[in-house]
Image (tube, rainbow, N blue to C red; front, side, top):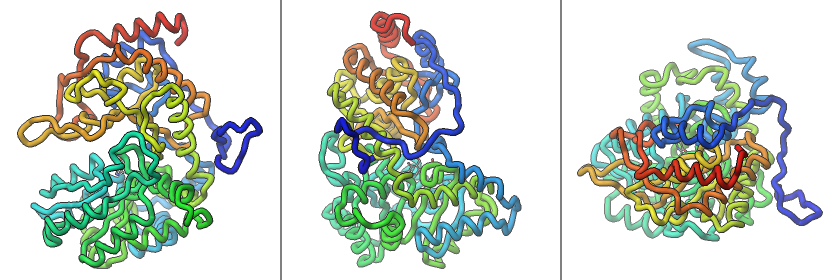
Length: 482
Ligand SMILES: Cc1ncc(COP(=O)(O)O)c(C=O)c1O
């Protein structure tokens, strides 16, 4: 916590909550972890939770809920149509974002389906700071394409630029001139830019992009899934917002956008999703798709209990002491790794700590998925499950060739308010050991490769017997320790 100083001068993250319900976790021996990884086809998505010590795969749908969220679930109004729960959630959203219309959906990608089907015509481009996997999939499924116009700094692993998720304004202007407004479906800003290391977007940048879009008559769509982290960074990294409360910052952002959508698995620490807008015609067009894909308008694929939890979770997101919990732990994890020269994305973002596999595994070519190999190795070394965010998470080009990712990251997500500092220090300890032994890590190749979003179900095998060698070295170095 930035405003709690320790006598020692150390910068120690301080949890602003207490734990009142726990789940036992298991740490199995390294030989069993090796076997579990083999059974999972070297894809951390396919591990079974019983074999996982700390699940740091994602922050999606796995955040700790507050006692008030659980309490609210008990007052859910269970009905197909006209549920009071819906109206409570709608009122909270209207209050926070000051936008008139709300459409519920079962999660973030469901919102993307509705937005893409409504706004993207075949042949049209969408312009954005950076894509997210499901966003791009829905746009391309509807015949559109994606143009990424992140600032060059956004791709640098080591940086001291506070808002690496910003759109490059010159690239935006060039893109609009080159493509022509009639061939552009919308411009999209993703808060807390996921695939480049949870990097925030500045208010100044959002303001500039919004002005250009309004001048050109282009719709501006805002992915607010990682808004909580982004709000924290605006408050602590932009001096102009130091004394502005979180709700006012949120409303200012929303006032710049035409459409706001979110995954409630992230924003609001619940499950579900939603779309907000102020344009009645656009709302009515999108609304047609809700009963088709999600369910009736007053639940949209969510359980009413989740909707109640979400309404409270969103209000709690307006509390600085709630949203600062993940970024300060991410920073602590990054700092523990940096002490041992492990290459991580800096400045630390929200969402998780991102290890640069391009440098960590510099000896592994991108076509052998270095970030996937690193994620598998982290599990073998620690029982911590993280995720590949690199070439494996890309889709092949039309001609079957690999689309090499700009960044090869192993993402160690920090679910909100779930893990303690000692668990975070354990994670860092094992990754630091792995870094010393990085030469032992080898590449991967596909055994089963789905065409679409292959990182979810794809199965791989190691090139050579490096996982066995790595597990053996762990046993030699750690003796009978788990
Ligand atoms: C930025 C961003 N947008 C959209 C989504 C999709 O949301 P969901 O997983 O709820 O479908 C995610 C999920 O991780 C995300 O990080």
